[in-house]
Length: 384
Image (cartoon, one colour):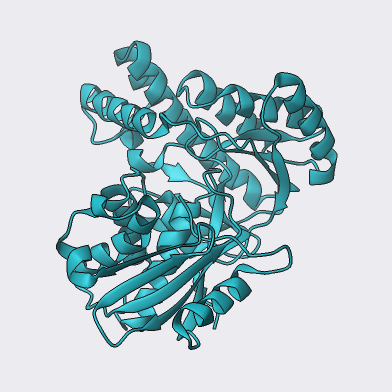
């Protein structure tokens, strides 16, 4: 789920949001707020296990143009869908979220979560525009939720911290939009910095910047969206909780590889093994990045673990990784929850991957992938 996309080839999300806002409201917005998408370099399905991850904000973004209203109505326009949704604050706060269109549950969910956090939210008009691919595993939904949250936070003068805003975005996605998620996407979107990944410790919610000097960084969007992803995600989360219970630890963050291999079997062993080894790969990747050492083998190990132990890959993602490695990449892996979406490649130029990816996907009878370079960029904030 996402917000809008630019109206034309040359239009930026900021320009689109501003223009459409003036058309909708007949006046200039109070401001423009942006939130980037994110790519997870390494550390997948660790967030809800209180583990570690190393994502970075990317140079594709969602922009919200917003203005305070004199009444208690909340109106949102998606430029991608060219659809508008309007509701009273009373209906948002006390109503049934299923009454809203799926896309509108994200901005309205933010309002619902902010009021639960004690913020006095006014009526607001907002227009959303974006150039983040929909459903590609680049956190378009988190970018939408966070962009709305920081806009409303400023307009309401609520004074919420980044951690509080991250939790609000998570609640909007999980409890209103019905997409279960941890806090990785929201924290990455908020805490990103140019040239750095964000090391997130989900046990303490502390973040730390880690320089990313290695590259190029390239995203391969398989354009695959699997309808059963939400249910499969929930199944894996439940398996991790059951594994922790059987081990007698609060979460898999406290488990060791020796413990899980001694006490667990079958599916629970595989799920827990991925989480424990993935945390170790994040620690090693962080150390290597700080000393400007290659991390390609860690990305390959992560993908194999996600494919074999966590079973969240798919043929398109496996092919993207194989082609990237065959075309000169140092490493590649699926990024995001899996079941479709995107892979990330390190060490090969985007232009060197386009043709082999296109040919391989065509031979396999898959949709044509989108290949593009990304760079770590600044996290969410006010544009104007």
